[in-house]
Length: 359
View 1 (cartoon, helix red, strand yellow):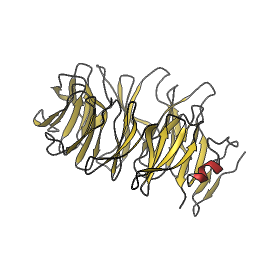
View 2 (cartoon, rainbow, N blue to C red; view 1 turned 180 degrees about the vertical axis):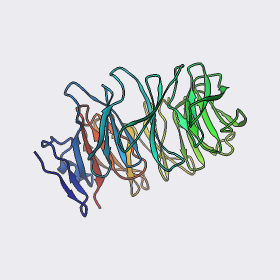
View 3 (cartoon, rainbow, N blue to C red; view 1 turned 120 degrees about the vertical axis):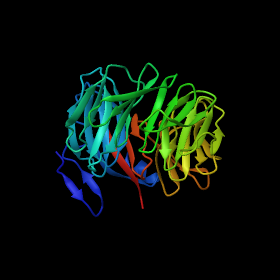
């Protein structure tokens, strides 16, 4: 067994557990100017497989295909809690982090056919509301209301304190994403509409219409919304007046995933074209990586990209060129991190590694 070692000055942490076979060797990582900050093994059964990773706040949340849920510290990899929230076979739709009026964080998800609120510190279930309808996308909330998208194409507004339904809005088509703020609510549909309305009444503020359905979650970044559409365009909209795009970038390919947005760059996966890096302010192409699949993290003008060839490619955003490539053949799961430089990679057996750039 390894003993627990914590070195704050070097930020190197080793959990108490049997020695792990590394996902990627240290020598290979050094070629890309990366090092291992921590690595761990999830407490899941041999018959279980890691299904998804969520990065929220200062935690990373791992969900197994048996609906076993593990919360880890992003800094150390130490387990915060682990438990099951639903029997195997139940669907967990989305996981969001919300800070309530008492400045306390809570996790929000749709589990099975229930709206569930969970403590991120202890993993305890705070509240559960059974829903009498199916939903099509993750729930959203602000300080006063929850917003739920029904399979009947209606947006339902529930009072947050007691989950009483106050009113409904007919979206006409399937709702693909909801973003809630205290000043407005925005929802998108598979018909290509992006609609902004008042948070407490069915009053239209503005509506944008793309040429085809909106795919994946919309991304809010400050006063901007970034939206991918099946019409092959990525759009930047203003949250206050979104009828006319700030810019639109034509990818020339089919889009079925949402963009990743960082301080200066929008990353969009395009079928048969790979990953495109788009200037966030101008809406112009910076570079395109044909084998690129998704962004892992970004640091000091460098993008760390996972590819369909089982490699990590480091791209220089300023020079628009490839810098390094590392064999990531053992990596089958990852978390896309747009908030800092940490890279989270994993395999289906539950091995998780956090990488950071060398200074």
